[in-house]
Length: 312
Ligand SMILES: Cc1ncc(C[n+]2csc(CCOP(=O)(O)OP(=O)(O)O)c2C)c(N)n1
Ligand SMILES: [Mg+2]
Image 1 (cartoon, rainbow, N blue to C red):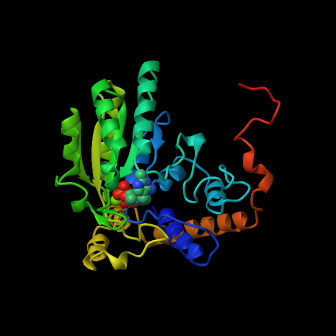
Image 2: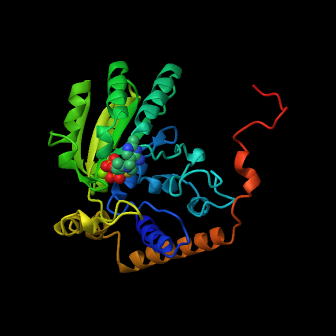
Image 3: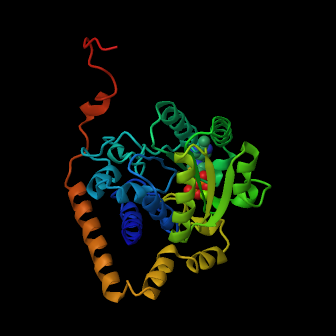
């Protein structure tokens, strides 16, 4: 979680300096990614929303590769063809992030259908925000998954904003999790700033999916503690007390308190972890900045077959 926060601070700074093009932070939402990482199995598939990069890194995606992606350089797995801060990490079953809100929901459901047909134990996890619950894919995906009882967990991170639109203007229901009732499966709302609660809710939903019990919806209530992205200025629309309330539920501080109470965390560990995160991020930035941009001739590599190669 500290690595995630270090990344957010540094990347937003680098974007302001014009060294990277775009960044979407996850500050305030780290407990969702980390709780999920603790609960999922290697065979499970992650279809991310906008802010689950920490889950890819926790699953083993290389920080340096992620940095190459943020700099859109020649070692970026997408070779600069994807929006920056839209990572793809195939080796850890983390599907390329889509900018088009909600599309990953029906993609995750499609994968879950395939898993069921093949009797594969892997569960699909679809992450998305409160804003995505207004997208067609949300309704289509939830309905299909419910009707066919598919092994998918809908992870709805309600950070209370869809850029400048507050969640109260997104829907007339108070609790988004209730929407699951209409599709015939369980929906729960939990505190998404609490790693322990996230882990417990996901464990239960994953067990259900794995044993043929079908889909679940979990609503993780969190605070978006930063602008929507490096292109946004929330002071133009967000009430001043929102951040004050968010800071009181800071997931990193909250976990630190729990671990200190249990006697497994002290100042020295915190210092070491923070110094390690800082060193790793600095070194990754250095490597990416020393890497050339993709060759313009690579524009069609991996996209089209070479003329005359005859493939189908
Ligand atoms: C189909 C579609 N409509 C609109 C947008 C523009 N857009 C980008 S992010 C966003 C808000 C998403 O809000 P939410 O789903 O709550 O996710 P969060 O950013 O809060 O994590 C919107 C409307 C888009 N990318 N795709
Ligand atoms: Mg949101």
